[in-house]
Image (cartoon, rainbow, N blue to C red; front, side):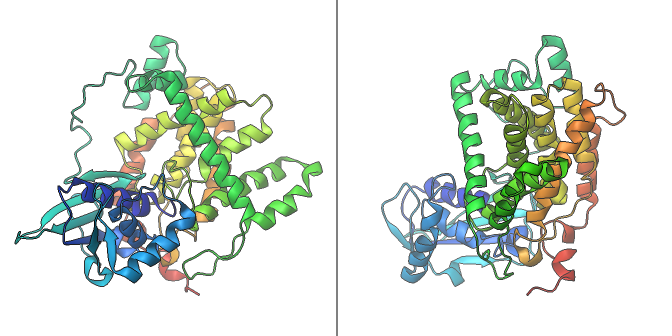
Length: 442
């Protein structure tokens, strides 16, 4: 659910996790939001996400068309359903029980939440912290270091945690990057189950484009941003007979625009790798489907498997959270993933694919996250169109080479990480700097 994976999807999941962890129905529940969740939470619909999660709804299954009515009922009745595990209701006063701790941060991560639950006969509440670490992922308590073992006993046949290891695994086993990922996924599920999951993702991406092309009107939030995808689509359809490179890039931009307008409106999108960057990969995948001869479902799966391999590396070695990395960790990572996916289906070698991913990020380094009004609209929607076009350019450049290049993917990921650490917090999804303060809201 839009508009933000870290501010909407993550908090909804955390709220549900907390409620379902309770052994019974409490008499009161409170949520405190810290860091970026507090500073830009209202614009990112974090308050709505918390109410939905506490009431037992999941981002992957809640009906987006029903959300306004659900929220209205919660606020009118002054109560929430006690998660998905309890058939009971809990009084909930939003002004008292949902608190935005503006300017306060929890130590482990800038996207922090603290939930408290009171029970009859107990003087002290049960308290649990959660952190939304990007891409909709949530961790309770403290965020572990990258080297902390996860505690599972799954053994992958071709493990890799760096671009260098990824290329070495491919070379040693004579496998493409997509096949490495597919076989590693076999440690959790059958190949058929993985392919079914991929098909669901592909279909959801297509649906977000299709729905975005049909909608019109103003996006919610007060900026009075008007949807453009439908009108642009109607104009481009009249120009199909004059389809040149410039027109193709217009179509690609349109695909991304449609997805991110859906995201801004609170519709359903694929978190790839985040909601704020949800339009890049679908747009480039749709470019492959519409403009590359011989495109098929197998190619679409290989596209996503390769993109996932690149996404793994960013999440393992840096972060995909704009609250930590700025928008280089969202649109930059999406661009890198999409470039690698496209290079795959255009026949690239593993070396060329890694090069495409590197180019995709190298030219997004330093990209800030400074949404006006805390809304995932300006500059976020257009930024996805730029990321999609840049991904295609990166793939084409890489395919003109032989896979050898001066800057490795590992080096550019580490550079992104260092840049994110050095970036001032006002440029990292706090709406305290950049466009967020230099453009008058209207």
